[in-house]
Image 1 (spheres, rainbow, N blue to C red):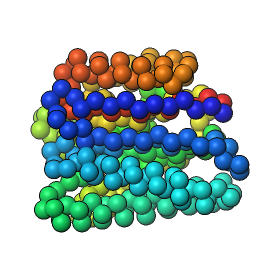
Image 2: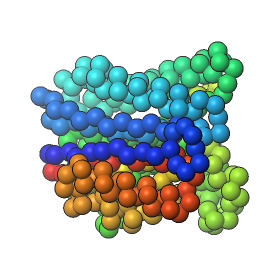
Image 3: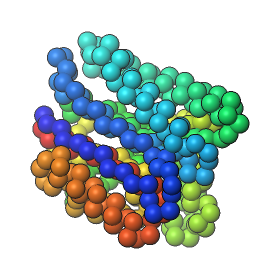
Image 4: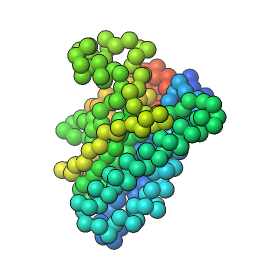
Length: 260
């Protein structure tokens, strides 16, 4: 199995600070072969120090990859995934408390989204809070793996609107869950199996608001990701397209092409 990966980010046309943060880690293990981790966090754009919150999460996840994951690699697969899930839940609960304490000490409010996926062989586990997204390339499209924890998505689910275009702009960015809240968020959790060569895409809302799934597929399907440099070039083109479509927010995309 081979993994090619990259990260591309842009502060956007109207933001002084980039509050997004992303991570891709790839390693070989003796017992489980190739392991890869991809994640993106979007610090809350309307809140102070959102970049601190997103960075805290990414640093904690990177530390987990280097220090805790290695202790799990001798487990059988079923126990391994159960242990990873429990470990991530504990990590998010701790980070949530850390962000709240930081905000209280600084007399500010801050928060962040979180979307991450761990791949081991053909299996994966993902965890998600907020409205950043994970996609898989599949059948000439990019299929959304996560579900937005947002007011807009709730309105769609309840049938209050039939299309997102009917939602007021002021409501589209309201999150129902994020890290940094008084009550730890309830993450969306999923497990699955890759059935073919796939590119996993993690992105902040600055990208998905203006870029379609088919556009993601056309640039980042495995056939287009011959090298890491190719992936980075295509990610940059997607960001440039979002900017040309007048996207004002920070824009981040991390991509990981998995071939078997």
